[in-house]
Amino acid sequence: MKKVFYAVIVLMATTQLTFAQEQGKFRVGLDLGYAMPDGGGGILVSLEPKYNIADNMNIGFRFESAAMAKNISADGVSLEANLAASMSYSGTFDYYFNSGSSSFAPFMGIGAGYSSLANVGVTLDELDSSEELEVDGKFGGLIRTGFEAGKFRVAATYNLIGKSDLGEGVEVKNSYFGISLGFYVGGGKWKK
Image 1: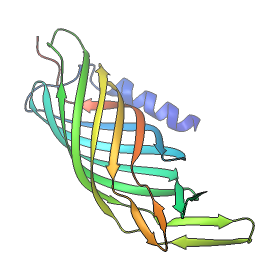
Image 2 (image 1 turned 135 degrees about the horizontal axis):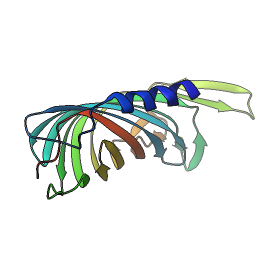
Image 3 (image 1 turned 90 degrees about the vertical axis):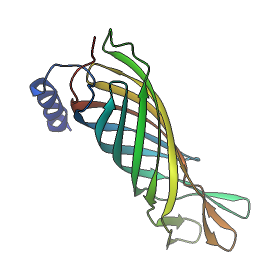
Image 4 (image 1 turned 60 degrees about the vertical axis):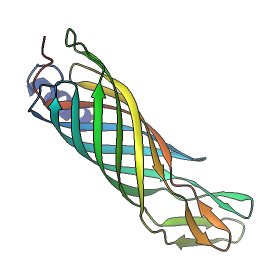
């Protein structure tokens, strides 16, 4: 863990010391955070290359992996599933509320894409058995807000993904809320 922390510090120190974005430039973001599905929790990691279509707008493509333990509802009974990782692939759009006079930029964003959902593993201690239930992928969307300060980004994202019906009254809620901290490489600087 210490090696990862030091690698991130070195990477940030060697990147250009410009701020945020400039029209016509590319940038790449890396975010790490906490994922909160219904009744569970986990971690998330995302990589998002972006193109700045204007000084205060960009479009991108987000690759996100979220490893979470979720609740499963079966005829009114709630069980916690084992930790499993899902992948999502989303086109994104962000709008920045920045006048260009500082490196602090609040933003709002939306996105749409496909989530490849992990199979759900359930362990029943009373019966001393475990079972893996197959889950199909789903199309979904996201809405997010947060701010950037220099090359750093803090975001709160709600990932809207439809429920999975596993048959016989068993249902899994796939939507989750995520809070992340990340940084950018590239993108130019805020124009003055």
